[in-house]
Each structure stands twice: as structure tokens, then as C-alpha cells.
Figure 1: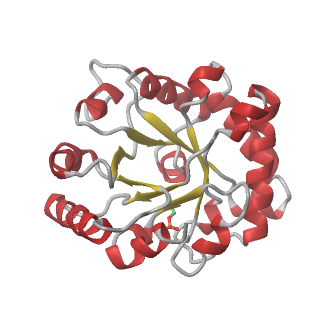
Figure 2: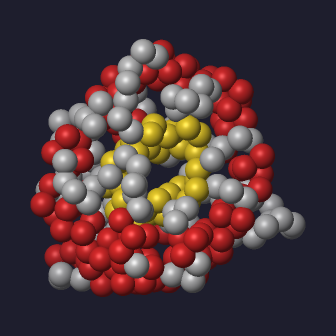
Length: 251
Ligand code: 13P
């Protein structure tokens, strides 16, 4: 059956030393705790190799926040999926709304990234979600469906089985405004239905669908109790042990 996951997305925060300190503190906090979900931390590229060297993989798993849409070559400043994998990282966030909005990442580009990630044995955490105007005009389902269709639906059922999804309504990211538990469940159920129509119910049921957007210690439990919410992708609250661990413990 699908896994429960709590994944931190540090975004562009923490220098290398701060990142190492945070992972060390997380591991200390998790040491003797029996947690009921996988814990993943997704950090800047430059941290990955060092963190991989000190991480206890039975406690915390390592992820990047992006990879290139090309395999290798003259693409100055880019970091390939193969390079990410060579650090020991196992996950990569793809299609985060900040990448879509600020760096022009289209569904067509993301499709390439997903394929390269999978070819290098990285698990994509594929982000989808509507902006406020789209929700206010009732277009959220259509927007999310299109992102899924164009980003993922050329995958074989076998490859699709390796993907994690994260629904992040853009209006809830970093705003302190969370989707209500009912809004999250409604969208997650719609996403699962969309996956089932393409890949079959068994594949849809086996897919972890995370919620992201101002998820915190106060609302995590209610969100995660929903049958179609399989965990969270956590921004701000993943930057401190004291705010991240209670979310992990919400399961
Ligand atoms: P916040 O938890 O800071 O709202 O960010 C959510 C997010 O974008 C995680 O990817």
C-alpha cells in the first residue's frame, strides 16, 4: 500500500553548515522515536553530498529540489539528475510552483525532468496546484488535471508507480493560509480519480499524494487524517526541528 511521507522543502535557505546542523538535530530528535511515515529532507544541491555522508538513511532520506531537463552537456549552471543521484540523494522535487512561476518551467519541460529523474533512479516528488484566481473561478480541477496529464501521463504504468505527487495550492504556500481539510481531501480524491482513469485503481491507490501549503504542527493531524492525504510537503516549518518533528509525529 502507499506510504505516508513527510518531506521538508528547505527552498533557498540554510548555508552548508546550517544544513548539516539541522540534519544532525533532526536525527537526534528522531533517534528512539518510532515514526509512522518516511521522513525526507529536500535541500540545495550544494548540501547533498555532505549530508549524504552523515545521514542515517533508516531515519531520514535525502532529496534535491530540482534537476535539469537535459542529461548532460553545455548547460552552464545546471545540475543533472545523474549528478543528483551520484550524491546519494534518492528524491527530487519537480514542478514546484516557485519553479513554474519564477523560472518558466512548463509541463513540457517538467515531463523531460521526470523522465531523467526516473532514468537515474530518483523518485520525483511532482508538484501540482492552482493559483488563487484559478480557484476563485472554479478552475482548480482542470488546472491540476492538465499539469498531471502533460507532466506525467506519458509514463508507463511501471514508471508512474515510482512517482510521488504533491498537491500545493499556490495561494496556500508561505501565506499562512492553509487549504481546509475538506478542500485538501476533495482535491486529493479528484487527483486519485484522475490517476485511476489513466493507470487503473490499483496504481492510483498505491500512489502517495502529499499536501503542501502552510502545513504546520497545528493543522497537520487534521489534514493527514483524510483518506486521500498521504502526508505533507513542508516549507517554512521544515527549517526548524521544533516545528518539523511535530508534523512527522502527526501520523
Ligand atoms: P510552506 O510550508 O512554507 O507554505 O511551503 C510549502 C511548500 O511550498 C513546500 O514545497
